[in-house]
Image 1 (cartoon, rainbow, N blue to C red):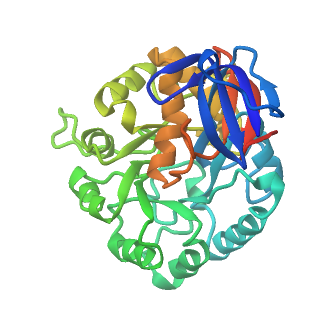
Image 2 (image 1 turned 180 degrees about the vertical axis):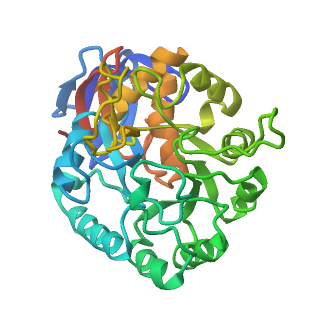
Amino acid sequence: MTAIINAELVMRDHLIPDAVLLMEDGKIVAFGEMRKMSIPEGCEIIDAEGAYVGPGFVDIHTHSDGKVFFQDEPEVASQHHLKHGTTTLLPALYFSMDTAGYVAAIAKLREAMKKKECANIGGLYMEGPYLNPKFGCDRESNPWKGPVDKAAYQPVIDAAYDLAKVWALAPERENILEFVLAVKEKNPNAVFSVAHSEASPQQIEELIPYGLHVGTHHTNATGDRPMYPECRGVCVDEAVNYNHEIYAELICDSRGIHVDPYMLRLVRKIKGDDRIILISDAYACDGPIPPGYEDVFDINFDHAGEIAGSKMTLDISCRNMMKHTGASIVDVFKFASYNPSRVTGFYDRGEIAVGKRADLVMVDDKMKVKKVILKGELQ
């Protein structure tokens, strides 16, 4: 058994100061204030030294470590995120891959998941294939602009069905329900996300009964449907905000470029803290930095100088969310751990509770990571 002492435990809705947490066989077996608990003899001791100890981060949408894609160097990318407190992640596979590219990437990541270095990979996030070709970085390389085609998509579903936790799609694509039903046939628990889309709220809501419960990088790569030239219409962002069944992913960079800080505060007010998910959306791209962005250090740009994801990890996302919205450390752990674990079905983690997996991260008040524990083992 292992005991973490002198911890400030971050619970779902409160803190437990001067606490101890006991772990055994990779699970949390007890916790509470040190003055009320006795530590069994022979315990291995980990001294948190007053740090906040919260559930390990769950990043459901990340393509890379900011330099290399997961499908190219999964061990490197996985370890980078683990060092920053992400104990569960879903590598995101982008729509720029054709059928063969998707299948090969899925096979490589399936093998990587067997390695200790990739123990924090919990499945896949399929950012495609059927998104709106008008949106997204590197959209010129989209091989999925044509009709929904079973011959093209079925090999991808067959390769990824048991690993893919989330399938991102544009509900306005013609015959998209055919694709949705094909995914559900292989995996009835699959979750869908509206992404790179200009769908109407009605088109989005039609897919909620089939499992559309996520808005991919909310307010990014979404269109508008104005009813009149002088009026703002309603589209993806409004539908995500309105429907409680849909969680809003947020990319929270330091400058508020992906999502303006005012918008972050507005989304939080509308959605409530139970429906916000922080993602890194880390990407690998070395395009030119456009004028005015020379001091931006945590996002990427594509060859056209457009935003191409981030260089972040979730500890940085949490810090930025605290800065931009005034969220507490309890709040950001909910956004970066509990909420993403719920929507993706990782019910054995994402919070400090007896019986949950002992995935933990120790941070200071600025979310700087001190120590990481994965399945009860100090990393």
